[in-house]
Image (tube, rainbow, N blue to C red):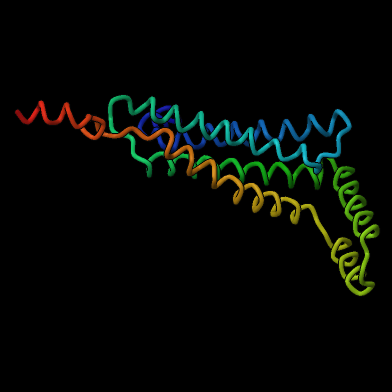
Length: 186
């Protein structure tokens, strides 16, 4: 059943497979940096965007390869890239929610403690400081998952557009030089 669905709809197959691979590899990178003792929400965490962008590029290239000799325009490339991006970010956010709520709750507690320490070190206004601490006390794992979804979703729009432009295939006539076009007219 799945084989026939994927063979009849290469767009669906490509976006789901490459989106799931991107999300899984990003999450495994998160677990890896957590396992080696690095704070998982540090700047190293942003390398997950590179992993997702790599799988977006691979997915667009694969879909273009499936179309072989057909024209592949910008909107097809950007559509595939955007769909892979959305699938990967949604799945990654779901994995992050489960990681923070049940699999690794100590990482969630460490994140809240680190944020409280950062707020304490930079307290300028007492009322603002108390409000931020109150909001941190109410933070739940779903808030981190939504934050990851928004951050990665907006940041990945740049590679989506770039990959759509890079992998497009234009008509052969548009690539002819002026001299070759004049020779054809004579």
